[in-house]
Image (tube, rainbow, N blue to C red; front, side, top):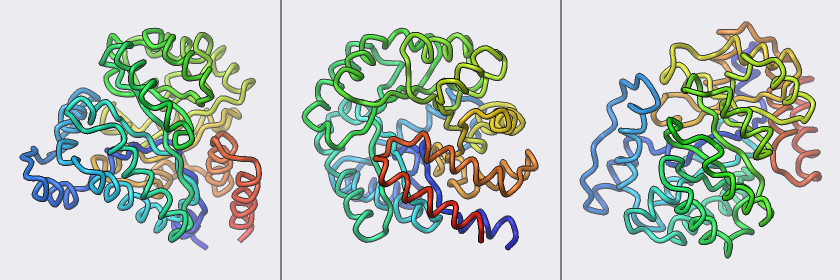
Length: 328
């Protein structure tokens, strides 16, 4: 089996994908027309995180009804199934919707319907991670957390995304402490090559005590923090293709170095409708750029399962399927 076929058929776990970032152009146009909403069509040409977000948020205005959110999540889950994704943990940004008048239960209800259907019909298991928008206030984040509490059974964890500049993890320390007390798992974006990246990683890891870090490959600049990641088994969810759009390269060498040093790094697709690659394409792009072996590609997926927020029985079953593919 050649490498492309091996990766295509490998059972995959995806831990870093934004549902709103899977809004493909055809679906965007259809939802906008159905809802009578005028939205700008994303044109690409991103040069950094800010230029990406300037196109990302306006497109979300096409999402209005529960059926819209269902269709968005279902489209991603069908694509995931076609790429042999067996488990996904899906970011969503409720504040981007509630802030324009869409009720929280409308967003969550649509996503939940798609997840339940995907498990029944596609064999894809998925969970939701509620992300707070870091360029809004901590008070707004806390009120969003309170709004989510009646739906705790539907949300596995909380995260932090959007524009990192001037919005360090410490700004949300109290919100994440309350989320931890409520039983949520914790993750945070520590985006690539941002001002203060190392301090943000240190704060997320040592002060707030996150369970995972999203992106975070700047950690290679501080060997002591790399050692903490390794000792604590804290994983990084890295997105090579999107890195290449918002920074000067994919950070392939950094991801490979972390993998080879024993850090539980894994690979995912981030916002694939905008960056042109789902999880299979990200794995293949990284393999080509960093000369990864089959065993290393399997280890990336083994890491994903080991840091996923899964019940042990499900993790064991999925690991067994991965190991069987590795021996094929």
